[in-house]
Image (cartoon, rainbow, N blue to C red; front, side, top):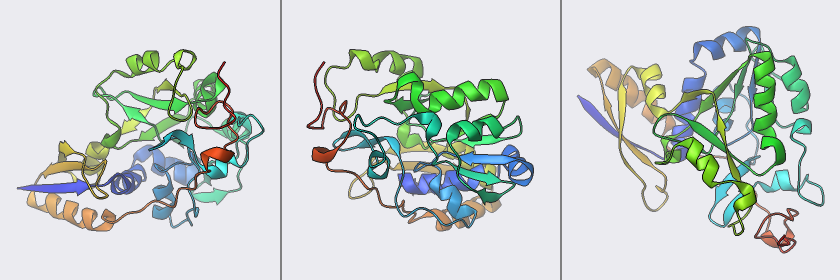
Length: 283
């Protein structure tokens, strides 16, 4: 028996959120330690699954928009006159201390308190056919993810990356990083971003379906129209019982929507290094 399913990017994110919470290391961290959710479209559905009130608008940096690479307006509203944010001082991550929401803290303090049993959940921008992932970054020193990786090397916590196959590219991540060297980009739609390779535990829809339902998910087509842009078509294969479970799961995730995305008009963007901003000055 086989089941054919079409998932929009938000539906994939909801699927991945459900699977994140079924991971053994996450269940242990939720019961005894810290789970830290980097704010993004990839982690907001985890709040829903835990019964935690989601934000009314996305806080996102390194996002891809039709006008170019950008950041959400609620982030840009906080930046200084150069439009830069000290990643260590960012206090937007959601902290789950033994499964309960804890008060927000600056990222540097969060990372100081994390240990080997803690889990940091982070969205990414790209995955290659070999399962390597990367993050778009406009900041110096690797931005937020650079701070997290340096801390992880010292503290030993796990970085878990749920990523939808809509972000699959046919290029090795190391080659993406070489091609997207920020200092070599002279023209850009939006903010020039580098690609930072990230070593992490990676979970796509394929692993999520296997973990949640015991079915094999084969991506067979991608793309779409009229709101289906970015969709992935999967064929699910398994026993009748497993496929019935998959049907129940799909009924729970179909129609999933993200919080609204608040973007500043380019005319008032504070990022002097964004090529769409009237403040941008060519060096």
